[in-house]
Image (cartoon, rainbow, N blue to C red):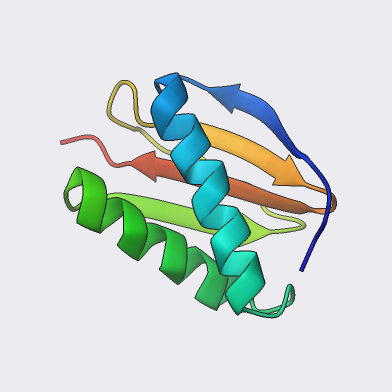
Length: 92
């Protein structure tokens, strides 16, 4: 588990959804080893699909690049210590 505070790098999500994203990341880090990024990402994705409807994507890791189109109001990129989290809902 990482103990650091989440640092939001970029987002267009409503504040309540941002908090939910960071809380979900914290819960996933409590359940899975920090090196098991696939399980952490799957946990967050399933949580967002369940609460906000399907179509969410989640990328977790310490070194990745991305290029994507997302639905307005559904994007957040944040980090906790050395681990980064990218969560978004794909554009229709």
